[in-house]
Length: 299
Image (cartoon, rainbow, N blue to C red; front, top):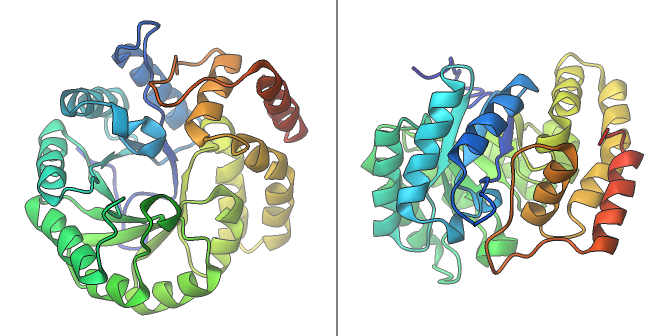
């Protein structure tokens, strides 16, 4: 059974884009995934995104993706939304992953802009629509032109919002002006996909976050959001400023790399990375410790 959603917050407000834990030999660590998922929900997450970029989806198999969704759904039950990343640059493959995620019990789908191929806007529209047509699950678009090479333009977002199952957008475009227009015109539930812009995006109409730093500071993100929603903008700004070293430190290297390093420092499941990603070096780890300490994170 899925948690309770509303049209304004179809996947809750605070979500973490969860890493995929691996065992020492590189195999999928399902027990670790369940323990990490339960820890994150206990820390204040309404939802978890699995099989996304932070979950090293480019290097996990379709079988592993299905196993991970089933394991995390089993671990969190109806305590949190489990949103499965199903985006690829092959529409047919994405449809297969969407149907697989639905069978595995996912509560929603995250669909990233097709990368590398650089399709035109009409191609994006047909791609996302085909995925949304393939299952009965609600869909969150994921707009991240820095990785995909192509933005979802506002006109395309407005068109996609007409689909009854396309209900949200994860915004990693880094453009508050374009976000403002897209939120106003589309009516989609808007989630920040860029931790440094969590508070600014709330100010132009976002409803929540899909966070990387949520692995470490979910209670603080929850407090920031609740302060803002309750009208205490000064308190929200104070929390935002306190978290700046965490935001900066966690993205000095690729996000998965730093998250797994930080989880190791905290004794939480994460494990090694799969190539082409590699572990932080000694000096980088020392800098990460300094950044996290400056942001109040206890290791």
